Image (cartoon, rainbow, N blue to C red; front, side, top):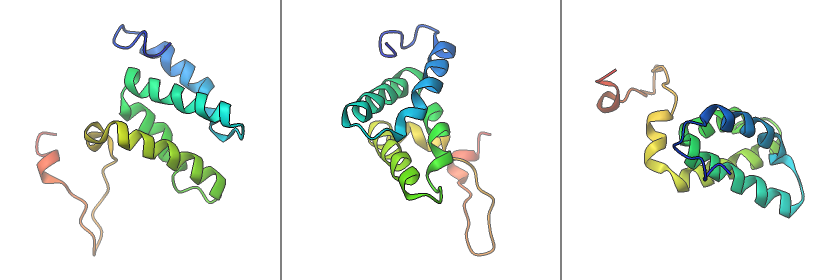
Length: 110
């Protein structure tokens, strides 16, 4: 359904649908897991990878291993499908004493 309306201005409805699909990433049935992953891939195409990345960032470093595994599986498929588009969506981090995170080549136009 998401692929059929990609680019037609239905983003608000697709985000609403994604809110119903997202809790199912913790299902254990292989058929449901495949269906959820396909739905999230369709949302990536229709909404853009930045929207799905915002949903995904919250669980990548969760204390529970089962949660981390589900979120990393989604992130890996997101990375494979849209590597170039994710660069602009990564969060900006403040520089630390020993680590420098600034990216002047990307932030000079902001």
